[in-house]
Image (cartoon, rainbow, N blue to C red):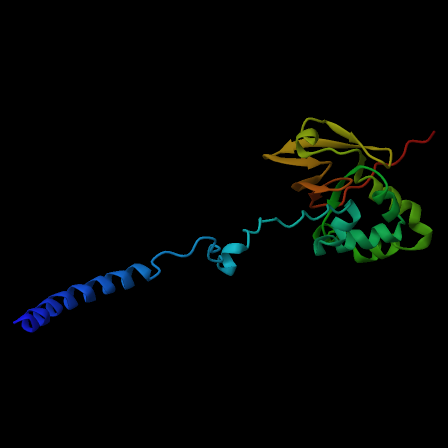
Length: 200
């Protein structure tokens, strides 16, 4: 009888003991990271700071001569500036240039143009070209307020409005305010000629 009761007691105790051990085992499983564990590393792309957008530096403005040389519509004018030895002059100060296009020079006889380029006619060519140049910077708003402009050649060119188009002498001003590092260019459709100098 006593032996039978012992087996009953052991049979009842064993399941309870098993449950207790299982609970203890679960408690030992790490559910949280141990203290002192470093935080997870950030992804490579998260580590890199966003690069600031830096715009391209603005291109440096060209002077009057370089601006004209960069435009194929002024190739004849540039050739004549070289023949008249005016390149350095137009690079060395502030000027406003009323620049005739290639089409403007086509209105002049080819033989006449060739004659202008001859060394013996350098002064004449300089007078013609500097008649297209005004000392200082005159934007379109300044030009339209003037009745005349004093040219580097020494003569005065007339400013007028005709059929809603601004003129310098007999040339139409077709484009204005081409900004340069040392002045401004206004485009004209005709070569303007200086008046005959008065005898002293």
